Structures are given as C-alpha cells and as structure tokens.
Image 1 (cartoon, rainbow, N blue to C red):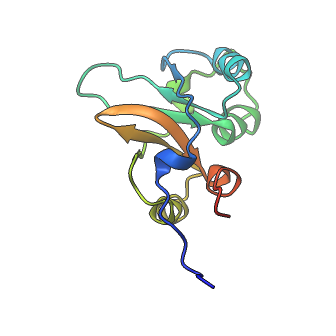
Image 2 (tube, helix red, strand yellow; image 1 turned 120 degrees about the vertical axis):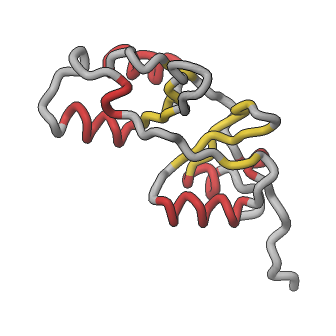
Amino acid sequence: MNNKRSYQSAKDVMTKKVILVDGMATAKEAVEVMRKEKVESLIVKKRHPKDAFGIVNVHDFISGVIIKEKTSEEVNMFEIMTKPLISVPADMDIRYVARLLINVGIRMAPVEENGEYIGMISLSDLILNDLLF
C-alpha cells in the first residue's frame, strides 16, 4: 500500500472565480456582488500602480460592520480589507498552501500565475476539492 500523497497544485483545487471590487465600494455593495457572484471573498483593486491589492471576506464584514455596530452603507472596503493580500503561486503544492494559510492565520488567498490572479484557494478547497482526500 502506498501511503504517499500525489502532488497536487493550488491550481488543481482552487475555485476559478476571482472578483475585484473598488476600495470605495460600501459593505452593502460588496456583499451584493458576493451574493450575485456566489463568492466568499473579493479582491480590492489597487488605487494606483504602486499600490497593493487588498482582500475582504465574510470575517471582515462581521468584525468591521456587525461587531462595530455600523450599517453596511457607512463602511467602505478600504476600511475593513486586509492589505496587502497574500497570494500563492498556481504551481505550489497544496501541502505548502495549507501550511502558509494556517501559519499566517488566513482562510483563503488568490492563486497567481504569470502575474494574474486566476483563482482563489481556501482551507475548504484543500479538503472539498482535493480528489485524493
């Protein structure tokens, strides 16, 4: 019996949908996009070429809107996003993706190939989309 796992890359298990939002979008607008697109996170666009991308997810809406007792119309993405976002290379082995996400304390990250975001990978994807699990 072979107990060694076969190699799988981030690209093999990622979700292929990547949605970007402007940093000035309100939480309400961003959540509407998330519902429509059926995604759990959004990448916040750069303001200028030397800026960094950000990311927002459900956790950010909970901590930045609900817990702070604000309305979704009064909070903008730039206020609650995590920036800079951490991305993973498309060919990174999922074992290392898992270690990175756990060690950094994040639940998901964009997958990057040739300087473009081609998908998103989450801790859930590592289990649910892993055909070898």
